[in-house]
Amino acid sequence: MKSITALRRGLDVLWSIQQSSAVTLADLHRQTSLSKATLLRILRTLQEAGWIERNEIENRYVPAASAGESGLAVEWRARLSALATQPREQLQRRVPWPIDLAVLDGLAMLILDTHRPMNGLAVNYRVLGFRPRLLLSSLGRCYLAFCPDAERRRLLEALARSPYEVDRAALKSHGARDWAARYRAQGYASRDPSPTSLDSPERFGAISVPIQVDDTVVGCISCAWLPAVATEQDVVTRHLADLKAAAQAIRNRLVAAKFPPVPPRWATAGVSLVR
Image 1 (cartoon, helix red, strand yellow):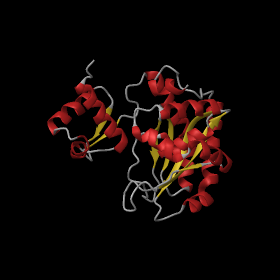
Image 2 (cartoon, rainbow, N blue to C red):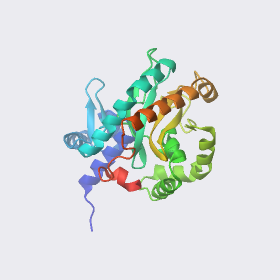
Image 3 (cartoon, one colour):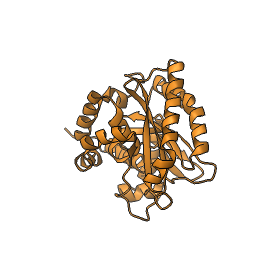
Image 4 (cartoon, one colour):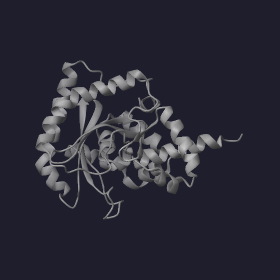
């Protein structure tokens, strides 16, 4: 049976946007080898379907924060973000680096929103709706390390069957089963910036801590920095306690509000995959 070529092209474009987080038409032309006319038709279709958005100021295409999802999932994430706002604003006043809140989204983490430091320091790539992969980000590694054992096994099994080579390759090379215990012992997960070149804007360090209600990881908070300015040990010494305090404060607000720690199971394909 023949596959649908047009659908495959659309999925390739969507994958490129999700992996790059923010791309121009020229970027997509180089990455996919599709003509610009074909790309414009695909991009318009993806925009109309709610899968991507266009940043009119920078003329870049970015993933929609709640692409293709039901109202219940969107409401759950919006409520979580709202309940986390005050602790995160307090945290940002103490930390001079961008602070992100993310939740599990299939085999990736979805960044719900980003708090920028007042001094203007920022990591260039971080935008609303970016989906860093589980094994390639501190957010994803944090979720894997601190979620229940049964859920971790299901996620690792899903990564081994992932249609994306980046997931399967990362699973083989990163030794997830080994570092999960280490991250739990040290109380945070970290990102390895080594796969990127020294002059790449994608090269940054990051650490993440979980927001937990009982055994459930509701989401994770990360702090990202430029390695040329600070080392991981510097950030851990100065700010790990602040990150943990913010995560605990968010947890307390969730419990007080009787917020359900697990989103509606049927609301998104990504969530139902691992719940």
